[in-house]
Image (cartoon, rainbow over all chains, first blue to last red; front, side, top):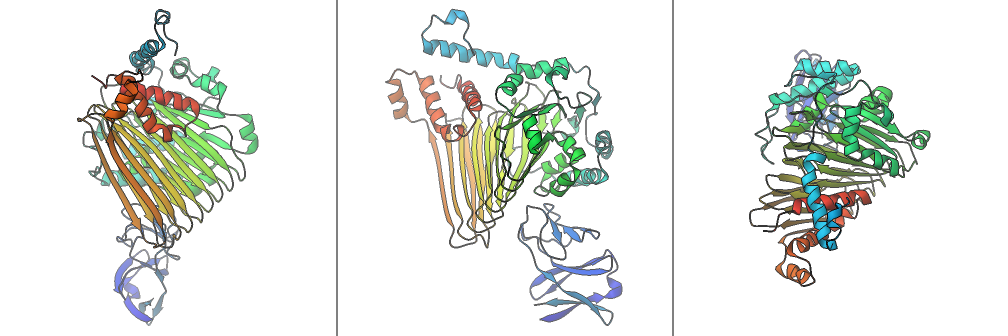
Length: 104
Length: 484
C-alpha cells in the first residue's frame, strides 16, 4: 500500500477534480462539498475515461461522458446501465496540507 | 375479410387471392388516410430549441427534476453527431420536424367521449372491437397525447397501474423517479437524447408483487401530421413475482415527406418477475423508426422481447436484456421484412452479468425487391457470470438477387464455463421446395408464401392469435407481386 500525493489542499477547492496516475490506475480525485472522493478513471461499460464527466456533488456521483452511466463516487458502483460492473474507489485524506491517495 | 359476392363462385384459392388483392388496394383507404388538421389545440412550430423543451415541460405541468432532465438531454442531443455505423440517417432534417402536437385537452376514459374524427381513425383500425373481445386495457395515442385510456376494474383492484406516461409521472412520481432513465440514460445515444428531451406519451405500467396480469396490455400508436415526430416513452416495472404481457402495434398513413419515430422503452423485472413485450411495427414506408429498448432482469426473472418489423423506411432497433441476477433469463424473438426501399437494421443484445443465467436470440429476416435487412447482435458473458447458457440463431431469407442481407454478430465471453451456441444461415427459396409444392397444386406465389410462413413460424407462434393472423396477412401483402 502506497501513499500518493495528489496536490496541495489549496489546489483542489470544492467542486474541483484532478486526474492522477498511481500503481497502474488512472484515478479521479474530487472535492465534493469538502469531502474528498477518489474513483478509478474508467467506466466499466467501455473502459474509457470516466472522471472528466459531469460531477453532481449533492448526489456524490459522476456521469460517464460517452453513454451517461452514473457512478457513485463512494462505492464505485454504477447507478444506471449501460455500465453494470463496479470500479475501484480509493481512500483519500489530508495530511500536512497535502491531499494523499492510498493505492494498493 | 369477406370477399365481395361476385367472387364467391370462384374456387377457394382464387377467392382468397381476390381477398388478398383487396387488402393491398385497401391499404391506402384503410390505413393511408389522414384527418384534417383542424381542431388541434397546440402544434409546435418545426425545429428544436431550448424554449420548445421548456414549453413542453410547462405545458405538461412537470416537476422541476423532469424539466432539468429534458434540458440536459437537449444539450447532449445537440452535441452528438448522427451515427454513421448503421442504416443511412443522413437524409433526416432535424429542423424540419414538428416535435410536439396535442390533439385534445385530456385523456379520455370511454370511447363515447373521444372526439369524433379521432374515434373514426381508431374505429377504422379496428381497435374498439379488439378491446371488447379480448383486452385488459387499451391506451390509444393520437399525435403526442394519449387520447383514451381505460383500465379494467379488476386491474385497478389488483393495484396494477396502466396509464399514459404523463399521467404516470403525475400520479406515481416516486416510482417513476426511481426508475426513469435507470436503464437508458439521456446520453446513451443520440436518439435516446432526443427522446429524453421531447418525449411525450407512451405507457407507464406497474405491477405489484405477486400479481399476474392475465390479459395482454395494449397500446396503439399513430403518426398523423405531416412531418410529425413520435417520441413516446414507456416504463414497465414488474415487481417481485409478478407477470405481465404488453403489446404494441403501430400503423401510420402514407406520406411523401418523412416522419421520425424515436421511442425509448425501459423494462424492469424484479426478482421472480416475468415481462413479455410484443411489437408489431407496420409504419408506412416514409417513417424513420429509431428506437432504444432495454430491459433488466433480476434474480429468477424473465424478460422476452417479441419484435416484428414490417414497415418503415429505415428501422434501427436492438432490444436488449441485461441479466443482472442469478438464474435470470432473457429471450429475443425477432422478424424483419425488408421490401423495396426499406432497410430493417435490427437484432438484439443479451448481457449475462450474474451466475446461472440463460438466454436465446432467434432472428428471422426476409429481404425482397432490393430490400435490405441487417442483423446486429451482441451476446456478452461478463466476468463473474459463471455457468451461462445461450443460443443465438439468425436466419436470413433472400427472395431475389436484388435484395441484401448483412449479419454482424458479436460474442464476448469472459468466463470459461460458458455454453454459447451461435448459428447463422442465409438462404433463398429452394428450387426443390418450390417444385415439390407446385407439384401438389400450388402456384409459385402460393408456394413462396407458404415457405415464407414456415420460415417465420417459430416467431409468429409466440404472438397472440389475432396478431399472428394480422402478421400473416401483412406478410402476404408484402409478398404480393414478388413473383414475375
